[in-house]
Length: 167
Image 1 (cartoon, rainbow, N blue to C red):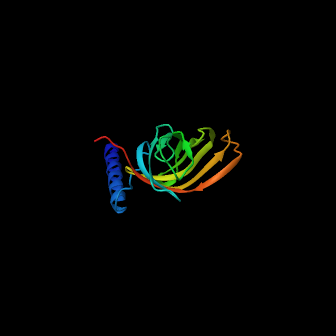
Image 2 (image 1 turned 120 degrees about the vertical axis):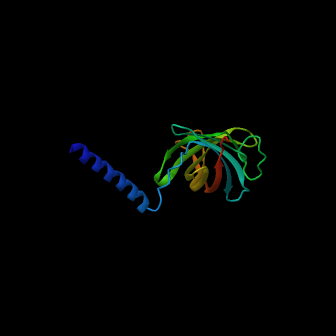
Image 3 (image 1 turned 90 degrees about the horizontal axis):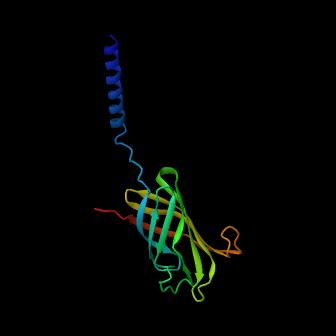
């Protein structure tokens, strides 16, 4: 008798799961892993689009480089050079990623350290596609990232791109 009751419970559980899946119309999409390297096209107010490579590492760290602030870039739109960027990320709501990237910034003529470029942003990663949803970009003048002499707001950027994969 117990085995018959057990089999009935198992059968009803299976039927319930099947009905739940089919009644929703489709299964919910799985969240994309944010970890990986993406090549992006970035547009910022007053400058032509540029390329960026950003890696979201397992454990929540970021490394980044781009064609606008790199010391080997000829950039008439921006009088600074920048180091590669480093930062942190964490998962946000609804498949988003909250991120912060920091670059050391140097005077383009004297090569002296003048401060930091800081990007605070939110991106959506769906499959292998990276889309910037929000960003706030600032130059922090001074040697102390956490206590700058001056903050120069640069506004926001748009960035879209694709994960680099191995076929």
